[in-house]
Amino acid sequence: MDNTRRAIIMVDDNLSNLNQGKEILKPFYRVYPAPSAAKLFETLDNVIPDLILLDIEMPEMSGYDVIRKLKADSRFAEIPVIFLTSKNDDDSESEGFDLGAMDYVTKPFSAPRLLKRIANQLLIVDHQAALKDYAENLEKKVRNKTAEVLNLQNAVLETVANLVEFRDKLTGGHITRTMLYMTTLIEQIASMGHYKDEVSRWNVDLLIHSTQLHDVGKIAISDLILNKPDKLSAEEFEIMKTHVEAGVAAIKKIMGNTTEHEFLNYALLVTGTHHEKWDGTGYPAGLKGYEIPLEGRLMAVADVYDALISQRPYKKAFTHEAAVKIIIEGSGLHFDPVIIEVFEQVQRDFERVSNEIRDNQ
Image 1 (tube, rainbow, N blue to C red):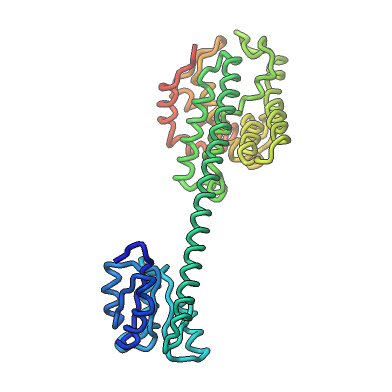
Image 2: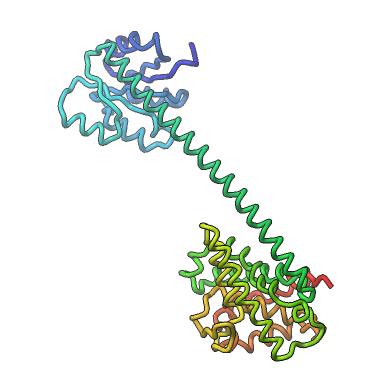
């Protein structure tokens, strides 16, 4: 048998019709005759046809019952079915179409009409397969292009983050550590179900990567202040605080030259609000409580913890236990009390990160 030909199962309990149909079809197709519904399903165990010709009026199981069973089985649901019938009324046709039949052919057969109806349905199948392949290939191309854009974005982002750390010699490793702290906090806050409506709307991967830009505005701060080996004066600290506005301005400038803003929106929130405080005494806007975006409230904990456990020329590094104590005491003052509950659950993970990624000093 020529396996390159399309396969058709023809189901009809009338042997005369079955033989006639087989003779019409066999010059063009591989034909599998089935005198009953039972024989059809037995054949389907070995052959998945390109099309089924199905008699409606059969004993034991009608064509309507057969098509219901076919459509309920994922292995056979996509096989096109053409009903064979001696009936010629609208109600019968309507029922068949409702059940998923593709066409009707009336008996007795007209060979040209039967072949044409089959050819039409197989052409539709081919077009559908071609469209599916096209859609899948297009989706693959989009995924690949998206991956390329994300890789480029991450490369640029890493370069900018490294530039910030290169200039700010006192905080080596800070960006990597705070990104990992944020990852830990977000995973735990989701696990505990806090702020679940808001968290569920996040693209967490974009948010996590955006945290690398939280100190990007330090590029605008003089080296004399940024790397001063002593504690900053009040005037110098006011200048240092402007790194937040400088970072926001830089991100907004990028947004003005791009159309894809989801990632930059996260960066804007984190950069602009991670120095705000729950009681309203933070900067730059003096936001209070829930006025501070959740992204910024989380970043505040990550940022302060890392500042505490890091050594500076003007201070020794706090121990993990001392840093945890200070942060917990800041609940309701500096920090969102709910986030402090989350922090308490993962503070040992913070310690592990801080031990693994040391300052580059």
